Image (cartoon, rainbow, N blue to C red):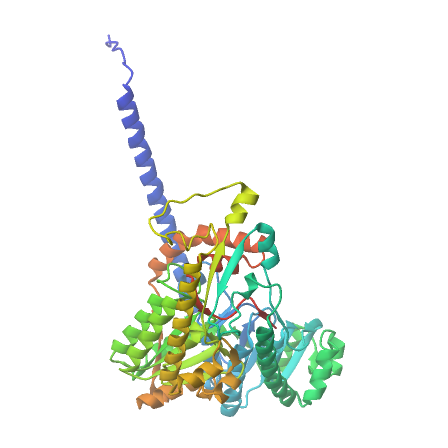
Length: 598
C-alpha cells in the first residue's frame, strides 16, 4: 500500500522565489529565441546583400540612374539597405557609375529615370558635369525619361541625348521662388515670446526671424532675391544651350507654365518625345542593342569592390552632411556630428597611406561649439596634408566656417554658402504656462541673475546684455577666422559677411571660394596639392562605417523613437525643424533653413 503523504502548500517566500525564477528562465529563453531569429534574419539579409554585389554578367547593358527616390551625398549605410530602408541613391554611387560606364565595353547606354527625388540644383550640376565627362570619353547615348520632373531634375535631363516625358506627365517649369514660414502669430496666441539676439551688423542673418516676425525683413528679402536670381540665370542659360533654345524662350515658357501640359512641353521644345517607360526600353533595344538594364546602385557596388582591391596612394573623402550638432552619432539620423568629423579628420591626417583630404560639405550650419571643434580639426589636419573643401548644395554659416581653412575651396555655381554670422535665441513660456495651462513658478536665488536665463520669465537686462556681447564677440571671431583662412582682411570679410547668403558663383567673385566645380575636381586638386597621380590613387571614405552588428544595435535602440518622429511628421508640418530648434544650443551659426526654394 502506497503511503499517502499530505502535501503542504509552499510558503509565500518560496512561492515568490519560484515565480521569479520561472520569469527569469522564461525571459532568458525568449531572448535566446529572439537572438537566434535575429541572427537568422541577419544571415539572410547578408546573403541577399552578397548576391546584389556579385559581378554583373553579360554585355549590351544599359545602366539605370534611378532618381525616383531621395538623393543623398553618401550611399545609405549597410543596415538601412539590409532591412529594406533603401533610401534612394547617392551622388557617390551615381558618380562612380557614370565614370565606370564610360569605359566599360559591356555598357551601351545610360538611362536616366527621373521623378520623385529631392535633388537640389548643385547636385544636378554635379551630375551634369559627370555627363559632360561621359560624353568626352565615349559616344554612348544618355536617355532621360520621367513621369514628373522638378526643375533641378529637368535641368539635369537637358544634358541627355534624348529627353522624354510620360504622355500624362508634368515638368514643373515655372522659375524659382522662395517661401519662408513664420510662427510669430502662433506663438503670440500661445503666449510664447522668442528672444532673437544678433550682432548689430548682421541684418542678413535671418535665421530665427521665423519666430519673431510675420514676414521677411528687407535685408532677408534682398539676399534671397539676389541668390535665387543668380541660380536661375545660371541654370536657365545652361538649359537653353542644351535644348537649342534662347533664355527668353525658356522664361516665356516658365511665365506661362508651359511645361505642365505634356503636349505644350513638346510644342515648346522642352522635350523630344512623349512616351511610356516601356517605349524608352524598347527604343534602347532597337536603336542601341541594349538587352539588359542594370540599376546604378548595384553596378556601383561591383565597381567599388574592384576599386577596393587596388593599391597606391589614397585620398580621404570625409562627408559632412546635415545640421551641425555636438557629440557623435548614435543611430542612422543624418547630421554633421562634431565629434565624428573631428575623429575622421584626425584619423585621415594620421593615416600614412592617405596623402590628401577632401571634406565634402552639405550643411546649413548649426551649433557653434561643434563648428569651432571641426574648424580647429581642419586647421590641425592641414598642417599635415592638403585639405580641399568640396561644397555641395549648402555650405553656409557653420558649414562655411569649417570650410574656410581649406587648402582650396571648390563650389558649384548654384551652391548656397556664406551666411557668415551668428545669433542666439531663447524662448519665454511664462505666459503660456500661466494663462493657458494654469501653471505658475516661483524662485529662490543666491544672486541677482541666478534665474536670468530662465525660459519661465522675461530675459533679464543683464542676461540680454551678456548674450549680445557673446554674439558680437563670436562674430568678430568668425570673421577673423575667415580672414585668416582666406588671406583677407577682417574689415573686408565684415563687408561681405553680416550673415548674407551667396551662391557659389557670387562667392567666387568676392573671394570666399577658389574655383567652381564638383567633387571629382576637388579630388583632382587634392591629388595635385599632395603631388600624387589622381588617376592612380584611390578614395577612402570617412567617417568609417560602423560594423554591421553595431549598426543593428543602434537601429534597435533608435527604431521606436524614429517611428514616433515619423508619425509626428505626418500630422505636424515642420515638426522636425521645430524639434531641432527646441534642442539647439543658444548660440547658433546657421542658414535660415526653413526657407523653401524650388
